[in-house]
Length: 93
Image (cartoon, rainbow, N blue to C red):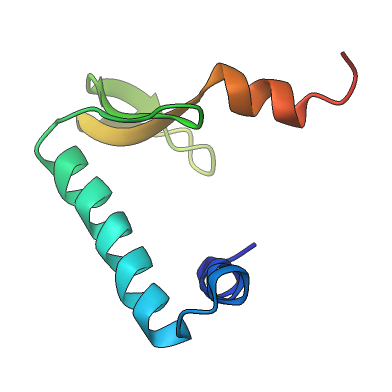
C-alpha cells in the first residue's frame, strides 16, 4: 500500500473527502519526520515506534577498487514493530 492507497482507503471507509485525508496523512507523516529530526522518539501504541539510531564513522573499503575510504558518522531512522502488529502479521502462530 502506498500513500495514495492509504488516503483512498481512509476516504472510502469514512466517507470524508480524499482531499481532507490527503492533508491529514501528510500532516501525520510530517509530524513524525519533524520529531525524528529533533532526535525524538515517536510511539504509536499497537503499531510500533520510530527512533533515530546514531552510527559512528569507520574506515570502509570501496568494493570496486579496494581503496580504503572514511565513512562519516550518520543518523538513520529506525522502526520497531509493536507486539500487536507483530501478532497480527504472524500467521504461523
